[in-house]
Image 1 (tube, rainbow, N blue to C red):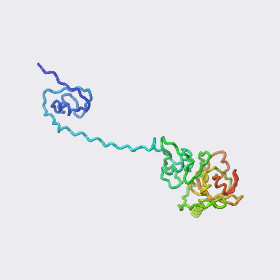
Image 2: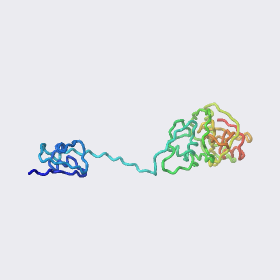
Image 3: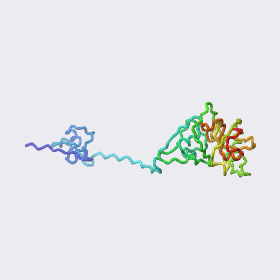
Image 4: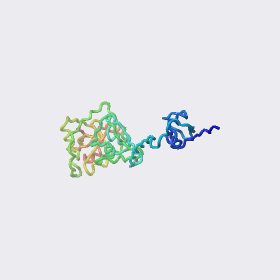
Amino acid sequence: MSQAQKTHTVGAKESLFSIGRKYDVHPRELAAYNNISFETGLTIGQVLKIPAKKSMAPVAETSAPAKPAPAPVKPIAPQQSKGANPVYHTVAKSEGLYGISKKYNVAIDEIKKWNNLNSDGLVEGMRLIVGKNGSAPASPDVVPEKEETVQVKAPEAKPSNPAPVREVPRVAPPDAVKKVNGGFAGGAFKSLYEAQAASKSVTQDRGLAGIFKSTSGWEDGKYYCLHNTAPAGSYVKITNPATQKSVYAKVLDLIPDLSDNNGLIIRISNAAAAELGAAAGNFDCTLQF
């Protein structure tokens, strides 16, 4: 009387080697007997026939191939805030930090910190980090060195023939200026403007100036402006012919393309306008940059 065929149902984590050791059968012989590839893994629930007669010596337990060492698990860096993936922006022609900050509702100093920027000048094609996914946007009114809080919308005005960006020589920041007779004798950027003027030919212009509200300049004499020709980060001398007073302002960005700005050649902070003795509305001025 023939003996019944012995079978084995594959369980979890079992292999040809472990099953072969269990029945004293060489794993290759076990694979050949069941017409399966020795290199192919087994599946849970698969039924194997166990040969009654063995032609190959069983594999000793120490002969089984060592299991490969598990791949090292890369530690996950703790997330400091929800959604830390950076948001990028590619700088367009004539685009400045002020316009980008308004576009993404983020502070200028945050953009400079994320991108390790030491100046306000940008280059076309530069890729900037302008935010972090999931994080609350910073207030666009918080800017470095108390830079302006401008209460105007800022879609970009793109001049047909923008002037090339000129490199401004690096000059040590001026010492804090002292307020004299209600003003700052032109402001904190006077020495920087003079260094700029000494390195290139000066352009002059005359026309109407507008005013925007700002928190900067009232305590430190740091005046800011918007201008369509002078590059962002450079300096402009503004003179009020009616009072013969002058101030020196740092260019933040282009003048927004709004109907309120039609006919203006510059917009300056209200602190700068106050030192010029200008009225609340638009006023005639001369520019040097």
